[in-house]
Image: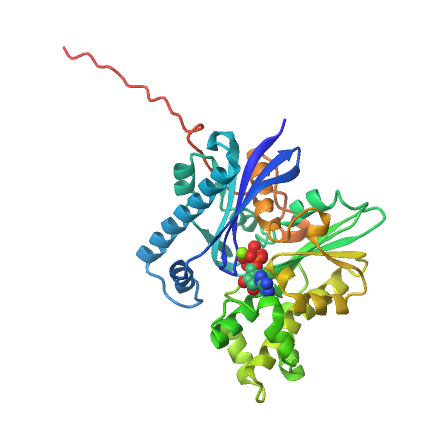
Length: 386
Ligand SMILES: Nc1ncnc2c1ncn2[C@@H]1O[C@H](COP(=O)(O)OP(=O)(O)OP(=O)(O)O)[C@@H](O)[C@H]1O
Ligand SMILES: [Mg+2]
């Protein structure tokens, strides 16, 4: 019997909310509808204001943004249902990743915080909502990330004969992560910055949200001195399991590196940042997945044609968009959270311990019952007054 799930993703790029309506037959998902809801500048700024490392946050402000995001996620779901002409009662559950405001998996008190109140989502959509996927994996000793490899395996493992071909999927969002699939193993980790640093730099210099098709980077020339200095960051040498976020690869991280090198123009810095993303992804593949026969790319970075050109040049194997294998690169992450919600609702693990470093497979997330599941009969005692 098929079941319908919604996956909600709003990644570190802070571009907006991806909502995917997915029909599952077993763990094979088919996209039925997709809705993208860009963030307004106000909410973007609000999220940024509570995501700056080392900056105190007013609890009242944090609480308000948590609720605002919950409402925006609900709106995205309700719009998606309207678009697909499907009733909320037909949906088994929503998987909501939430907006990461801090990811610190390597501290003694490791934590990762995704907000967008799931109580609001369950109430405003009426649909059971699974959220807070990362913290159970962290509690089990893992990084809490990346969580998409199990979905990559379920969905792309079908398109290839893994006994004959090894594939690597690179998701290039704000942060980039790879999943390597072969007949005998699965590897996955965050390689470092994806679009995040390129976005920071162009936003600060040209007031443009991102470098369309990488054309600004392409018009510049990389500074080898800067690139070498950026690549010396210890994160790149760290063996997996590892994961990272924009609180680490931040604008201040970049500014510190830039201040230590001789003069470099803004356009050449952009070119160097594009090379940094391409180099760190391809070097991670060469180091940890050297037997890759085919690389698939998803995430917004797939639209950066200069970045893809650099990745193609560095890898000797075919590099394709996931679109060539049936899934639009912009839809993969949201579909993954629909899949993860299905896992949790069926009491199945969603993490891959070899990837996150967790002690064991665990069922991820908290479940916030929707209206159908929350009908509670209150037994009222009738007292007789004498
Ligand atoms: N035409 C384009 N040219 C260059 N870059 C693009 C283009 N379209 C999108 N992007 C990049 O993709 C980013 C958005 O990608 P995506 O939504 O996958 O990231 P994300 O929200 O951080 O996701 P996640 O964290 O889930 O991986 C934009 O911020 C931008 O940098
Ligand atoms: Mg996004």
